[in-house]
Length: 174
Image 1 (cartoon, rainbow, N blue to C red):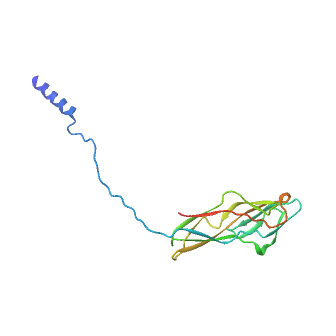
Image 2: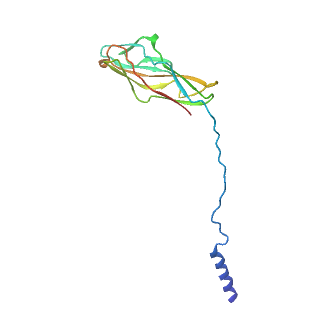
């Protein structure tokens, strides 16, 4: 009976000391980064957005949609009639930067106000001819795109004259 007690006491003593337990481990790892000097992305305006001359019928209202994807300028109501179609133009831009790099195009999200000193119109729903582009070969390379939008016309608020305003377009490397 004495032998059994000594063996049991020795087993409990070894289990309680944690002589074989490991509390942690450490490893050393290497971090690296590749740094490459690239051309900064640039954006140059080539052509302004021009809805052309429009006629607004008495009491008429509507919109004139400049769709750069379809390449069209379409009125959405009988109250707005394009007259001088030859002057219509999409806003055109050239992007410069590192060859083969992909970039995103973000036209203005909100409305732009056009004024002629006495009256106002708005342009909304700005749309680019593409959402992304790839800069072509060259040092630096280039790519192009166009932007359109929706001209909102209200006969009661429209006063004869030339209307102008500004909007923004942003490009960024993807």
